[in-house]
Each structure stands twice: as structure tokens, then as C-alpha cells.
Length: 318
Image (cartoon, rainbow, N blue to C red):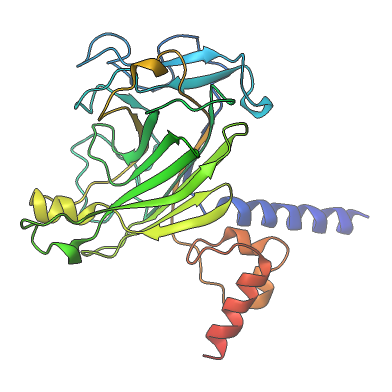
């Protein structure tokens, strides 16, 4: 019996390790322990504009939920673009990870730190505060960041007549070598017409690869891969003649055109999870894909065990 118990403990420990070592640092929060009102200076968050000491007083706040999905609990972060500005550092930044992620040469300027990792992942749920109707002009943008607005990616949640859309911008250096007169920012709608009556989940996975024009960004919507693109690394290199930036947090921003009628409403954001970590994979045997092993790999990512097994078979017999 002791041998059986010991074996079970060893297996359990091995499984626990295999499911956690994909990330060096992870932060998860649901706003339940936060005070209602501005999130500025709560638990490492920054939102100086909403607190009244920025370019504008933004409509960003922790609220007690009255119309929210059950999975959002009793409190959420609510944001609208009733008030906007062209500023960045006074908008809403999540708490930072201990370990940043970025290329070896990326410059943090002391804003992020820890042990630099090659991958970053952010996931959050969002829902409309007006599930039965459109909020014209509603838009909130989320960007992986180092804490000052030096964004490395861009994902927009916006309300449209046909439902909620998720949009993505990346910077494709090949379209504008050397940052000349052209525009290398590419806009892509990765999901459209999403129902307002239910919450949705966005996940952004970034793989930072040393050298130009080779970072990988994957955007998932409601658990499905919606788009694969790249980061903004070459914008910094080509247009600002600076190295790329590391990331350790998410900037939630309301810029561009204001939609005053969204004041007090907008989107609820909850169940935020941030992670940074090493590359895990690729698998070299089909056994590595079994018993949930497929979910521990991020180099490459797999949707299920079958996809992992197929990858191993294809690469053993090209």
C-alpha cells in the first residue's frame, strides 16, 4: 500500500510540474478583493487619469456588478470610451508580472524586470453592460505593454450594429521597409458579430524571437485561434530607431473618437490572467501528447491531443 501511495504521489507531482512549468510567472485576478471606484494604486494597478491626475478623467472604474455574467462574480473592471485622449501613461495598466517577456535586446528602461522570458500570454473575459442593445461607438483597446504605453500589440473590443467585433493591428515591416512614406500597420477583424448577451474570452499569445520581423502573435476568441500575426517590434526599430520593448502587463486604453453616450456603461472586464515563460516543445513522441501533455506545449501550440499526435507523426516522417 505504501508503494502504491508513493507511486501515486510521484505521478501527481510529475503531472503538476508538467502543467505549470510552461510559465515562469503567472498572475490571475477577478477583482473580488478590490474596492469599488478607481482602480488606481490598487494591487499594483495604475489608472491616474481616471483618478483625476492625467490628461482626462476617463470612465474606467471597478464596479459592483448588477448586470453581469455569473462567472464575473460581484465586481468587475468597467470601461467605456465616453472620455478619450491621445495620452497613454495615464490610462489603465494592469499589475505587472515579476518576469517580463521580450527579445534579448529589448529595452525596459527600468519599467519591467525579473528574468526575461521569450513568451507572454494574456487572457481576459469581457461582456457588454447593455446586453440587449448596441452601444454605438463603444471601443476599448488592450495592449501588451511594459507599463508606460510602449505597446507591442493591439486588440480592440468594439460594439457594432451587427454585434461585438474583435480587431487586431500588427506591424508588417515588409510593407514599408525602413519606415518610409507607407503604412505598415495592418488592421484585421478577427471576429465579428459576437452576441452581446453572453461573455467572450480573448487570449493573446506572444512569442518573442531575436531579430527583426519574426515575432509571433496569436489571437484566440472564445477558445479558438482567430488570427496569427506579428508584433510591433519593427515599428520601434524602423520608425523610432530604437530596440523593441519587453512586456509585463496589459494596457487597457480608450483613445480615438469619444462616445459620450457610453458613460457609466461600456464593457465589463474580468478573470484576467497574465503569464510569461519559456518555450516548451516541440514534442518528440506521441506519448508526450497523452494524458493532457499536449496542453503543456507552446512551441508549437496545439488545440487538442489529436493535433499534437499528428504533429509528431508528420515530423518523424516528413
